[in-house]
Length: 369
Image (cartoon, rainbow, N blue to C red; front, side):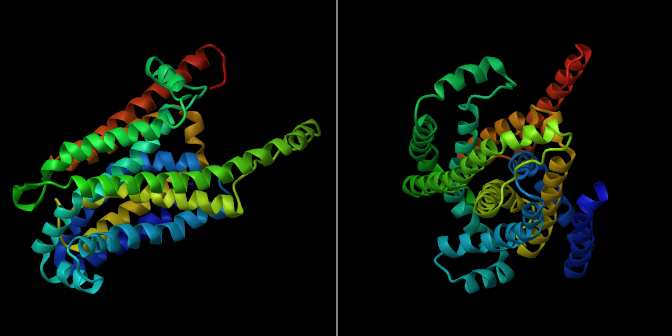
């Protein structure tokens, strides 16, 4: 199972490291290795969240996510995206932006730094909405009951998560954005830019999430219709087949996963500039890391890890909330990417340990975890 799931990641790693050595020597290999570890550490929570969605999809769409989705993630977010944000912010053509990235790396890094407020606002709002919709939802299994129970009651208020997100955006636009960090340690007023980018992130979440939710509801209706057939299959001794997302439903869930991955990638791409401003090495390192994140996602699904360790999804969503806040704070202040990665690891690690303790307690009582 391990080799079958991770074989593509292992192959891409070997190829990427060889390319790095031929491109810029052994020092480049070290840079790519560091970037790979950075991407995996910052995106582990992404894998957990993706697994929760991917397990509802058919094997075909899981394969699409691991193949076509990787191409989108690697070439779209890890290579093209850094060039596009420079082209837009500096009002350059994509060709000129690529030329700048290859020939004047310091200037390219300055332009990316100047574009960070808009990137952070878009990604921060998208991730914040994911977190808010999770904590305001009523669910049977609660990790931090003292917190999640009252939040679930508040969640019955219509559009509460959107209202809170807009309030957070307004506060960010009138505080952090008024002294947005720019290259050279200077600060400028980016209030309008942050406001527009944040609204764009919120709208993107509502549109993509709404479409995927619509088709997921269609799936639930189909599950209800097939419930009697499943009961009949159990009575006859047959194994009932699970209903999975297919067709348009799977497509929009796939689209949701890609937008989600893009939002998670913001901190990885920006953090990578603290290590190198060479877009070739950046694409290699972050691309390899993206492969491992996707392989880990599929592994979690096929092993049923989320079913065995029920608090993992909670920990990942709390890590998302922390990342959203960090992205908004970085509009004005610089935060080391190591801190960002550690927060996610600590939260997910804590949820894993809590799941283990829960399973042991249920086993001691003779109950099925």
